[in-house]
Amino acid sequence: MADTAVRTEDLRRFFDETRAVDGVDLDVKTGEIYGFLGPNGAGKSTLVHVLCTLLLPTSGRAEVAGFDVARQPVDVRLRIGVALQEASLDPAQTGIELLRLQGRLYGLTKAETEQRLRELTQLVDIGPALGHRIKTYSGGMRRRLDLAAALVHNPQVLFLDEPTTGLDPASRVRVWDEVRRLNAEGITIFLTTQYLEEADALAHRVGIINEGHLIKEGTPTDLKRSMGSDVIIARVDDGAERACNAVREVAGVDQVDIHGEELTIRALDGSAVLSPVAIALDGCGVRVRDLTLREPSLDDVFLELTGAHIQQEEAETSDNGDD
Amino acid sequence: MTTATIEPTPVRARPAGFLADCVGIATRSIRAVPREMEFVVPALVVPVFFYAINIGALEPLAEAGTGVDFKAFQLPVAITFAVTGLSRASALVTDIQNGYFDRLLMTPIRRLSLLLGLMMADLFLIITLSLPVVAMGYIVGVRFDTGVPGIVLFILMAGLWGLAFTGFPYAIALKTGNPAAVNTSFILFFPFMFLTTSFLPLDVLSGWLQTIARWNPVTYLLAGMRSLLYGGWDWYDLALGFLSIGLVGAVSMTLAFAALRGRLKRG
Image (cartoon, rainbow over all chains, first blue to last red; front, side, top):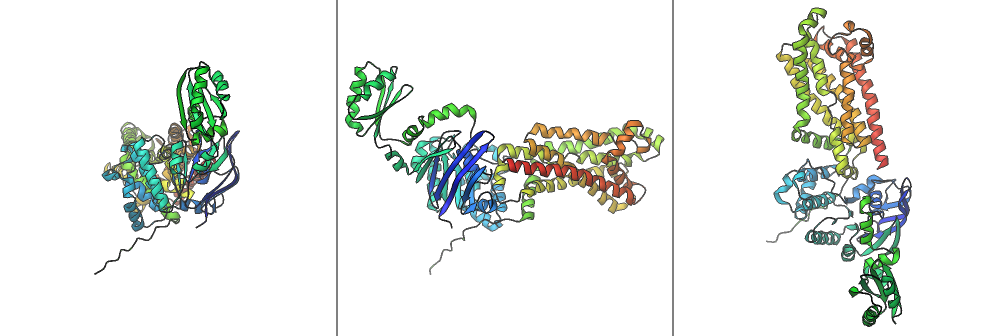
């Protein structure tokens, strides 16, 4: 088995004038959970489609499990499992029919397919409904069946494209547990997400993508540590500019950024400057709705790099469809 | 006594083989048919309806004017009505729209088998649906001068014609991914099926209709099938019938496989 599960070199994928993926270099080690984080439209899904051999790269190279996606697509397909953002299922089939067909198309014998179905029963966990038509399934059942379909052939690398989007919190935690369990079994996981806490909770390493570019990569801890300071968030009713000027004068404050009615204040020792910041805000006559001290999050990293929150980007691009 | 637990060998994916790929796709497609009776019922009702109407309205007139056994003359028309345009193209569009086509593309399946598997299913369905039409003819007294081999060849010609025609809806399905567009392929049915010898022999057609009918491959298909019903083995008519199937099939399959290549390229 190759040491590197996913490698890309200057990978580009354009759609006419749109540069969905623009010069991405990746190196995902075998056995890793790699979180690919970015807002809607950042290029995450396009990259996954290229790595899964659904799209050819415009230029550059991509290898999965040691095989070139453009020149050796069948070798790649034999080694990957994929659960795309929307569960890709045939509603007219029953769950068991779909899984058996998957086994058949991956060249498994009947005995091997049944063995895998027994092993996946706990994951699918939909009881007798497995014999019912998929069109009768709930969203959660479809997601679980989709994941099982991606695993029937025992893949080396599993691509999960926003696996928890639209799931309730309980289902989301359950998917996280399953991802960890699969990784413990030796499967490399390439996970795209727009949820910061998901990348934080699951990924050994995170790549942040924006507008087709990989803008930062590292462990969640390293990325947050790279901020080098604590974060104080102040939400004000109005006069953000005035508040910003006042806070900048506070000793120990390294940086202040304004995002609408929100000030992001960075300080090496946040607890030491929290009181002076509160006093400064009070002194400049600005009404403060909320004042919070916390350690940096991945969203802060994204904010630092792009000047926007992932969630804001999501809201702004939600009308434009997915990438 | 000690017991040893034998861990199952981890399964490894491998290419299933071209035939296995085709059979897998075909089996899934055939299994879906009884769950979509709206797909089957028109293919049975329409030919029976037209057969009954045509016989009821035109039999005395046509037999008086041409001397042909009109019930036998109409049976190939009924069967081509049943099988022309019968395909799983709408199911293919559904697969494209709900993402299942992408799931299939991410398996090691041979790309050609995605289409050939569906066509295998179509051939099976077309032949299955041909049987009740032939039975209907038998019930009303139609007999084959060429005997059982003639019946087999009659059904085979109907099956191959139906298969040849499926290329058009598949081409539209793969090109557009749009169910409404696929339905428009039915428009092709009308010139093929009505500007021909559906109601009267070629020599009693007149003017522009006779000219068009001479160029319509269905004319030669019907002539070949009719030759099996009356007059014994006519190899010339049969050869022209198979040639017309081959020509239409060559055009439609070229379009369908070009559309498949285009879709795979577009991603």
